[in-house]
Amino acid sequence: MWRHLTAPAAILLLSILLPCSTPAEALQETPSGGLVASGYVEGRDASAPSRAVKRRHAPPDTRTDPLEAALQWHSYKPPAPEPEPEPEPVSTGLDWPALRECEAGHLGYSANTGNGYYGAYQFDLTTWQGVGGTGYPHLASPAEQDMRAQILYDDRGASPWPNCGALL
Image (cartoon, rainbow, N blue to C red):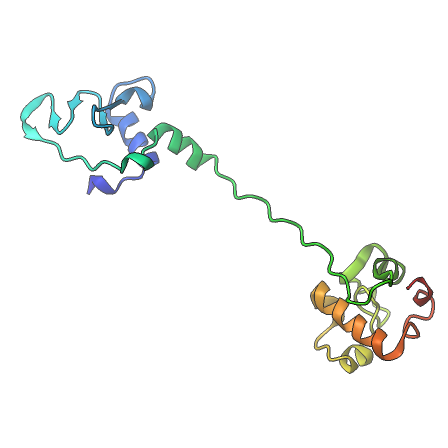
């Protein structure tokens, strides 16, 4: 039952059961590199010499200070995800970021102002479906919106963007 305790649980248990000012004082390293509670000798209870205490020791390369492990466990925060870089359409020499900024402004890929045009390239639903899109453009991934804009540009040039197409 006790051999399955995690380091934080073991430290909490030791801090309750043993009269020490800190849980780290309750542990001592044995000659073989294991950890035992104060008042115990490796493999035996010092207050009851006839009773053996079984200990499972971690392999030498994985042993850590239980207090340090508990502190790391309690303060663990997963790393922040890396921001995804803005995917660029395949055509070279075209200024797609300028077109996106002109068409959707600060709303970018999620633009939906209620005017019937959606996403970074302000597709209407008929045009979006005509280039193979499904659902609403502003709900599609940036990569899909870029791909659909590229398909539209390859088919019709800059004409679908009468005001901002000149920026391409």
